[in-house]
Image (cartoon, rainbow, N blue to C red; front, top):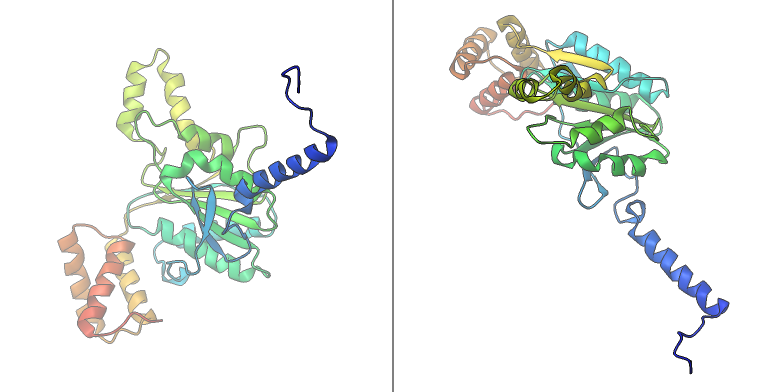
Amino acid sequence: MADGSPPQMTLDQIVPLLDRIARALEEKSPANRPGQDLNSCDAFVWMGEEARLEPVPAVSRVDIDLLQGIDRLRDILLENTRRFAAGLPANNALLWGARGMGKSSLVKAAHAKVAAEVPGRRLALVEIHREDISTLPRLMTLLRDADRQFLVFCDDLSFDQADTSYKSLKAVLEGGIEGRPENVLFYATSNRRHLMPRDMVDNERQRAINPTEAVEEMVSLSDRFGLWLGFHHCSQDEYLEMIRKYCEHFSLDAPWTDVRAQAIEWTNTRGSRSGRVAWQFIQELAGKLGQKLES
């Protein structure tokens, strides 16, 4: 214009412009990016940096009947998962304790069993990596309005010195204005009962002005899990029972007396007994026998 002021846009010009802006924002929304069909399969991996869910066509897991020595823990987690799948109140679960005792295997096996019991593919499993915990609120936003239920699972969850991402998890599990969506339940596994190393807690106790309050702030995260399941090292009898069940399941053709002796020697060389060690022995045995591990 002659006076130097910018030209005025008419209504006919403004409406198409706003429409283009709205479409651009909608395309950038995580819910509308490729791979966001939340009914496409029964399992996903959350890609935190990209804010999207990657479908997992086939989950690496074992049959729940092969998980030996954890019968009581198995039944508790199954019951909790079944209640959630039925739309009833259920608790976030923390599976903590000894390495190799089937914590993550139990979560995946429980999901598979309950999902098979629920008609219409209603229950999905979503794995979130430890390093993506800070993006958990974005994942909750994506899942909140979906027409199915989700078990969000984090394997080997723990926090170290100066790591403040645990506060994001605390807010999602119980705090915050919106809180945890009703269609989402959170399962985590950890070798640490309070998700933080003992020396970290001890250091905070020594340095803080009010040690009690400082430690309570750090360990209160584990209190957000209503269900605690503790896994402990197995006895030799439990270890051998795992081996026997595997041999029966996979029809491994070898005399039990020989298998038993080899299994004991195997665990002695490893210096530990666990479900993971039992599975590693079974792979060794099957290889020696020239048999494949097919159910």
